[in-house]
Length: 241
Image (cartoon, rainbow, N blue to C red; front, side, top):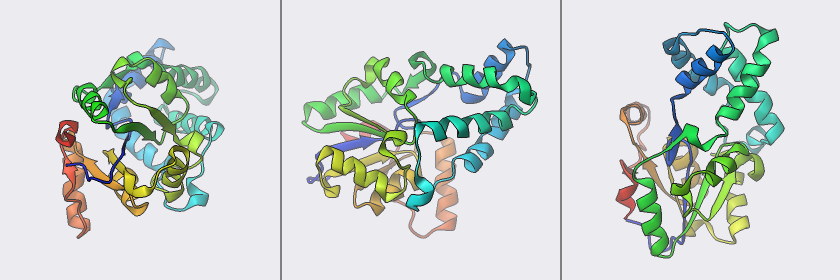
């Protein structure tokens, strides 16, 4: 149920309303193969999450959460070089550029089946809809080429906000740009830290989305490590209706 004070619903992007298709590790291997490098998808799958944690650590501190487009390019280049470590340093650049472009293209992103109908219903009820994501400017290309996301009124990529979630400055900047107060927002996202706890820390309402077994496993881990496991969890966006 959506609280009565809420006027704006904010959705995370990757893992909440969209996901890469094919999966990241398969995409990395396919692009690498086009340059003559044959890699093991399972090995890439194992490396990627660890690299993400190192190159894109979440931070609550504003000085560590700052970001921009150039920084994202450089950071992603480092991550790709590490994950595709079989590719020599003097040959990685064109592979990285091809991967960067790959994930810019809407056809390489899958919109979850519950997204379009939920967004349409919420829109009809008068809510303002926005997407708020730790992402670079490729997010806007994905949005423009995805008809199922056309109900979203505003898109906020962290590179243009200037900060990444869960830093409170990210949420405050969104509030300022939309001219709304914190209690008027409901955040929906798959990240316990960046989306759910980040939003709550900023005074927003929040729902933690657990779509799959991996996210449910994360919930189990969180329950073992914390006494404040969220009760405001949903398994589908349809539960917002």
